[in-house]
Length: 347
Image (cartoon, rainbow, N blue to C red; front, side, top):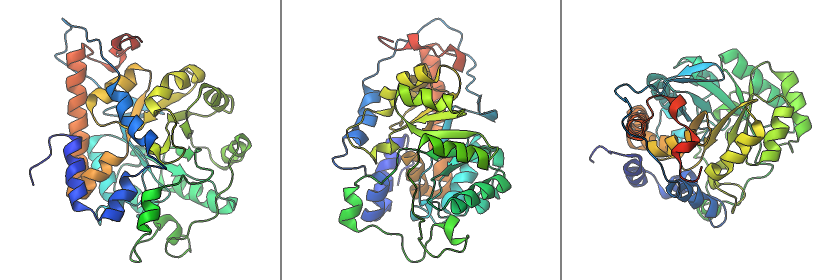
């Protein structure tokens, strides 16, 4: 196969590499997949207003996220079961992220343990995504392990009191193969694909989590101004504007559409990031212009992993890096600070 020249070509090649049930698990959304499609189409409907005659001979896209330096404002979103795409799984992804100078949010439902992932990269480049379980001892053990392994933040997913109706997975009777496990639980004395019973998480639950860790806490799944205001009132360090990749409540607005009101609600009191539908450097540029400090990509990582393992993930990140650099040049924005709302039509 020819080497892909953009993320969409990785998507096409990944479809040819993966079994249908695995492809559908990675690719699918909930119900009619309205939100899944909206995450992409919303970016296409945003128009840019480039400036000209600006010195763009040097482009600087380096920044920090919660104090950790990154070479670009593009991070890896938490996605489950990387070993379904490639036998090296999350470890391959982490090595690619390390080489790119980016940062990875490691999923609770990883197929490599959080310790084994930390062993292959700079832990300054790792955050840990967390679900809270009814047995808080199980939850606290995951947090303690992440702390001990050197992870730099806890990213609590808050939009999944129950799983959305993912009809592709129902149709395929999707399950992990017997040779694979949810590693963060299998290394804790639980067998196979055991998942503890989830808890209903409320704002009061955050008080418990804050008492359980000294790490910064990021909430993933905030979509409204009111919830952003509550988040900062509870001392949250960061917000990921996210609709779970279109996999939870179908029919919600796209993440990029929710970003402006969340930025307004946060009022500069915490860092705000955005995920969902990002496939081009111009998408990153648009999210930054709307106020995001950085964006996260999920499915493109898995496509790169499926096509060519660690090298595939590296290349996906390089493509997006290079596209963003070009977009900044053509928009007249040599630094991230130059990317303002005035770059967008009707901003």
